[in-house]
Length: 131
Image 1 (cartoon, rainbow, N blue to C red):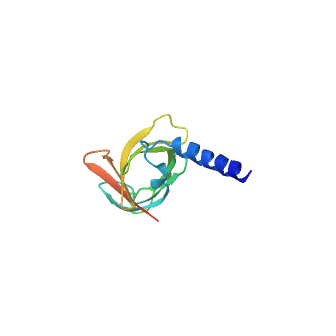
Image 2 (cartoon, one colour):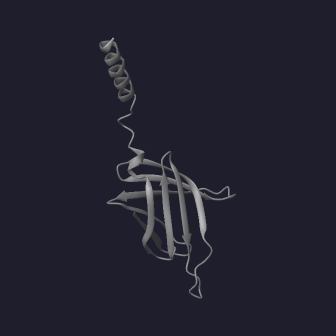
Image 3 (spheres, rainbow, N blue to C red):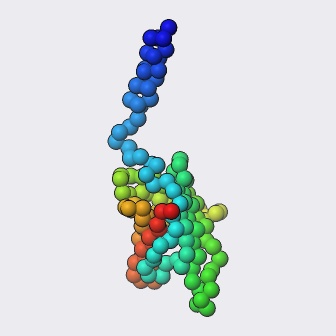
């Protein structure tokens, strides 16, 4: 009976490990909370990014206004997918908006960085540090 139990356990372990796709990157490498560490261009003044298991993403940012105060918080939600050891595809939208903001981000040494064209000219790069 003990041999049968061990055989069942070994068969289960083998089945579970053989079903894993070694080609797909591990989504958990990106999971975590990130705080805006630096930004170039006319990007946000403060912000955070949260990546949750299952591919859920949330970005919260506030912009500096002309009088020096901070804007209301802009919250976008959506999904992320790790494409390789250092790249993620991110798709976000504001609540109720049909527009999806798609970005490719990089992740290296605990820094999540994404770059995109500015609203006027130039390039904005946001760098978020994992806590």
